[in-house]
Length: 166
Image 1 (spheres, rainbow, N blue to C red):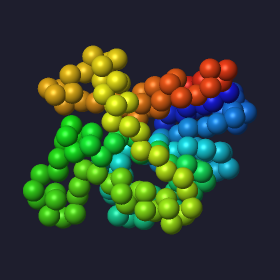
Image 2 (cartoon, rainbow, N blue to C red; image 1 turned 135 degrees about the horizontal axis):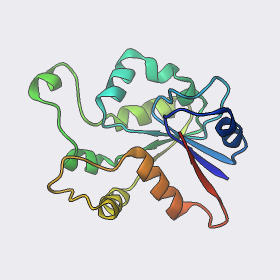
Image 3 (cartoon, one colour; image 1 turned 135 degrees about the vertical axis):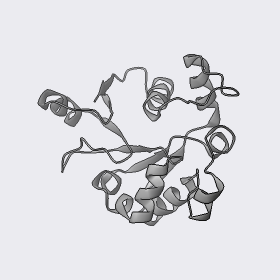
């Protein structure tokens, strides 16, 4: 069984099922993860202000989910971030804010010996089509969780069961 674990509340039974999974996917800084709980893949939304703050403050490098994950997945392809995600205003850029932290996340992952993957731009476009989002006109986008589910449905072995938690 493959487990996709969102950042919502988890009960004891959920944690047991997750612990028994063959593969565990989590997101960003995993506020519901307890010490010692496994993370195989950590999906990162490298276009968010939050990730930028975590990187700047060193929180990201010390986060147990990041430290324990064997693989980091950059949820949004740099082309998607560049063309469709909101850009920081001039003042924000002057103080160091940017909208794409992918390269820095990949660098940190490489320093820690972790595998990385960037989801293809085509997956994002397919997700928008499935959700009925007109990416040329609308200012919202598929979540990391939806993209993870879509990737798993496309790439995971057909014999593998997928369960979603939190």
